[in-house]
Every structure is written in structure tokens, then in C-alpha cells.
Length: 194
Image 1 (tube, rainbow, N blue to C red):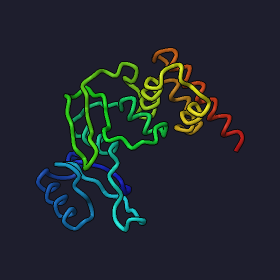
Image 2: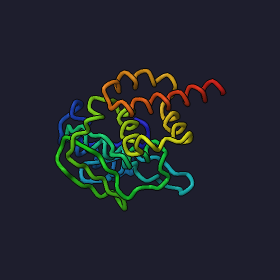
Image 3: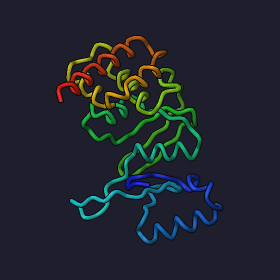
């Protein structure tokens, strides 16, 4: 896997026994190859050449590793989705996710990952990228769609991926789908100019 990958011991259960996995992870952690972020959550850290060390772990990747290990479905809440798309420049102290699992909280250094048990009606059955777009648009609301915002939404997906998103989102609230279509148009227009 590439640097930055977040994982738990469960990601290796198809390879060997739990005991062998824990022993191997412990050895790799002591050697400095991997980093233990939380109890049972690790990453293969990305290097930060500027700081001559490792980059901070990506909270979204950590949240997805936790959810994967617990068989939870998760969707970023509105503020987290805005951050992932680049519509919010502030680094949040709290990364929020809606889940079908229980309410829970994890402290990751000076950041917190919070899972809230709540159905994500408009994001059910969507791929990660489509769910992030839907949650971001819901957070912004239907009346806050300036050209720059639409452009940022449009840049989130490569032009060739929009058709899949439209198929997945055909049952979401109508105004959300309309904004997705407008965002895709800005993406196509920008692609034609380049």
C-alpha cells in the first residue's frame, strides 16, 4: 500500500492468524515502519520532507479504517464534507461522521473523530465521492450557490466520473441533484478550456 494508508489488524485476517498479525505489527511499529495512532489503528506514515519527519495522519483515513474494522457504514457530516472538497479552509478540530454504528469518539492528537448514529437518508447507497458531494451541498443549502462554490464542487470529480454520480444520486432531493448538475457543467467547461 502507499504511504498514508490507515489500517487495523482486521485488514490482514485473510493472511494469517491474529497472533501473527499483532506480533508483526508490533515489530514494524518498534522498527518505525508503521505508526500506532490509536489502540488497534495504524498508518504507514507519509514523509514530510519540510519537517524532516512524518506528516500528521489523515483523520478521514483514520475514520474509514475504524469504520471498516467495525463494519460500520459512514458518511462525513456537512462540515467534514466541506473540508474534504476544499470549500472550507479551516482545519477542523472535530471530524464528524454519520454512521449506522453506535455513537463514539476517538481522540487523535489535537483532533477528534466523532461518529453519530444517524441515518444519512440522502447519502444511503452512494459511493464515497457522491456521498461527500451530497453532504457538502446539504450543508451549504440551496440558496448559497455562487459560481466559485459550483466550480469547487465541479473540481472534486474528474469530468468522466460525473455520469456515475448522477446515476447514484437520481433519488436524492431534487434541488441537490440540480446543484450537482450545475457543478458538473462547470467541470466540463473548465475541461474544455484546458
